[in-house]
Image (tube, rainbow, N blue to C red; front, side, top):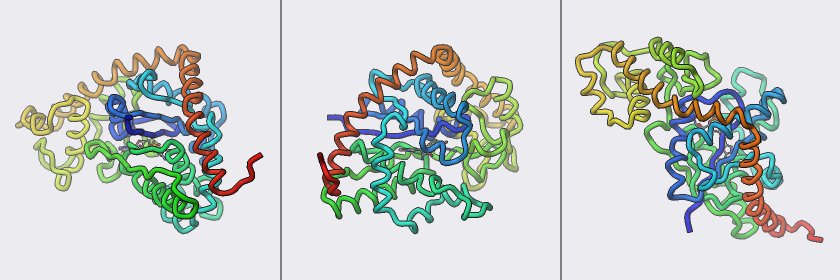
Length: 330
Ligand code: AMP
Ligand code: TRP
């Protein structure tokens, strides 16, 4: 039996190459060796205000991105979180064994509430990691492939699984985070100290659906380091090292070979080469995405099928949870 993988992305805002290189690209590769479930986590997205029409569109959009990137519904399951109510049901039960202090320590919560009055932060935002734990634990997940920023949430998931199992008897499998080093933390083009982020200015990221001229321009304007050499040195040359990582992941060429290729050439020439690599890679992906966008019924059918498949697993696990905690069965 193949081991199970579970991961998800929120339908909120556009996806950038950091999401792709840190998460989706790895998922595509994992499909052949694992039993994979990929979720569009819409109930996570509403932990910050969402326009209802935009949410509907973006939920389908993320599913289309999964498909266009090469997640194959014949091999893997794709579904939308809200279509399987067991996710929120288990989240409620896990809430009762989660500690406020644990949730306060989550860096994503701290980041998202930074500068704002914590009094007015949403309870859903605070509780976000518990819903994520429910997503993972419902399916006896073995590995959770995500970017570095999600490591802490998977740690919390393990804590909750352990606590539940100790209190009520063995119920949940202990999941492990799966982080591929290259790509786990793609940095912003305008600030190589921080991760690429969709909430930053548009000069920070390359969106997966950016047009070629926009991609070229953003790369041209990307911050560089002092000196002229194209060399991988994350400490001394964080900006160029980030660009080299992007080049490596999109072209499949080894970093040392890329360094040799651009030896004696300046940053300008390297950036032109990089833009070409990124544009060429994204071209077929974008074409597929826009084709899928024209036919929403096709994607909806896949999502419906996916929800049907996972619901069987989720409802069984939830039955077990209800029994373990002693709710009355009728
Ligand atoms: P988010 O957009 O925060 O919902 O993230 C979706 C997925 O992309 C998660 O697995 C993140 O860990 C990953 N991710 C987000 N930003 C980056 C980044 N700059 N570099 C690598 N992975 C990222
Ligand atoms: N919190 C994740 C993010 O922001 C998204 C997510 C929700 C997730 N549930 C999950 C990722 C379960 C992996 C497994 O990227």
